[in-house]
Length: 503
Image: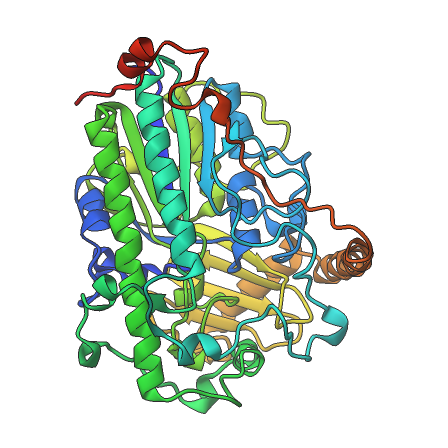
């Protein structure tokens, strides 16, 4: 069999806990459910960094935050960093991106042959954090309680506008790929912004849910709130402006509605693959960049290594994929090697040029075994003044930050992470081993100095670029209207049959 096509579908800020696929009793995700029922569902998949740009850059590169300098949402992904799109091109794939990837800097392709849409967020250094004043709330571009207070219904929003464009462009590209006569396999990424806040949904998705049935998070005692969560709560004004239970129910209602909206687009893309005759040779992968706390621990959005922020859905379906639920811990770092195994059928990979930090999950997805069940995480963005590190191995998760007490959780037996075992005498040896591993694996002081140096440089560059004429790095999609549809230099009698795609 020739190398399979790959359709990679991404949500934004989708925690698996809030999908029917992963067991939520209310949230309707029939299309993701269907893929999981005929494919592989990974039950302990994590982002490497719980923030949009770092999560995506580390996913694309198969390397950690500190390896590529993916510090925050205003960090540039250097053009010299090889990505999965580069590697897939090397083994003969056509690579296309429709939707969000949050590239910062003048390189807006990073190995993709083409981008069908612009991005939804800025490509410059505007969103640079400031660790010199880490305790000061960020104003202009930062999350606050408006997202919770304003949750509800709307005919459209800029996020709906964006996802409609992303979905349309991806479906049209699938049709083009099916009728263009090019036998090379394709890698098409369709990356949506929903269910990312603000939690505003169109009426047909809002009305899928009975408002009074929307569940609220389990309460947490004040002494169970860790310092980083407390910083987040202060920064987003959850502890000052605050919100009521009814406002929390409204925000969760809007989030659930937008999860179903994303799932509907997933279904449309799968249907397009099928109607275009591509299903027998297309692997479909679905994930998110990170999750959403959605009120758990009194926190919202992401930016922490707690489960609802750092866990992601990860489902693979298609030719060669076994029907199974996989408990092994894994992360976005494992995506690139997995794609290389899919693309080469387990054969030799192209020259990598750099060492990858993940492992291939293809053997697991295709029915094999794997003794490895671990991953790592790094966070160096807002609401901390020092790097944060995470190790998840087996049932345990260990979180370290130089300014905070360590955290150790038995995630299997304490999925809400209410009991920090780091100071429990019964777990002294386990905590000490993790602490020693953190010290050996990461030089926190050196990483902090790199983060600060990067922030200082980018702050100066942003101020300079904001003075005088604007030179935008934002992607401008090509639109070759001179050769679209039927034009004078084309024979309409030939154009019709050439562009027709029958079932």
